[in-house]
Length: 235
Image (cartoon, rainbow, N blue to C red; front, side, top):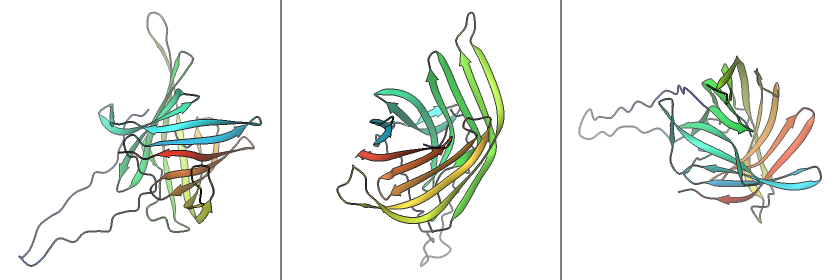
């Protein structure tokens, strides 16, 4: 999946204007934006992928409550592999669109943190074929290693440039559904510095009321396919 905890999220808030100029008028209302990846509390996606001729499972789960990180509120998406929490992505959602603010992971005794500023725009506005959007900003990586008497922190800074493009709609077959699903097909590509891998190229298929049902990642000349095997709807 895309992305990497997040720190400061700068997403413009919505300004509500309401009022009547006369008794027989009512305020206008804009059409709601489509939601391609809804972060409902407790929602859970399980995927299968094949590696080294074996099939393995991994899972994403939205926490039941949003979390506060450095004064900002985010949805936390926890990633599990073989039942163990491997990393957490931090998202904000506004008008149906997702913004990735950062990521936190733990490997051995080290904690790794990535902060994107401004947050990376993750989903389209309309979903019309050909729609393209881009995010450019600064990326800060921290590696925190326990030490005595105090932890040591290595900080590296760079940039990210990321683009999403709607390729159209496709019907995809995944283990989670007996019938093929209608899905919005989106291409993501970009780069970060410093962030390994230096170039990212992925394809996502989003099904209405479910979210991502299939992904393809092209990294280091390899190809990884993830297919939804189970979906648990959130609250």
